Length: 83
Ligand code: FES
Image (cartoon, rainbow, N blue to C red; front, side):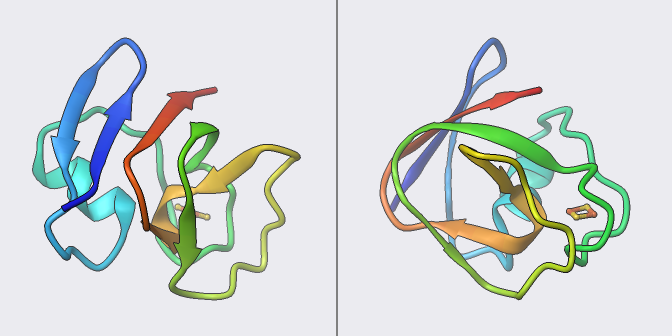
């Protein structure tokens, strides 16, 4: 199981939830989001390390080094930072 670490908040396991956002939500993390569908960009975070895979094709294009937690799952242990 991949581990998700949110800098300044702690870490949790990814347990086959639909998205990284859902895993973080379930584990009580205070993550920003709005649409959950890759449209708004509210869930963008900085990917510090690790690899992710897109589970839906977002309309919103995240900045360099950023990912949309609603639209990816972790493939490896990841470290992210809320921006
Ligand atoms: S919550 Fe809107 S793009 Fe992720």
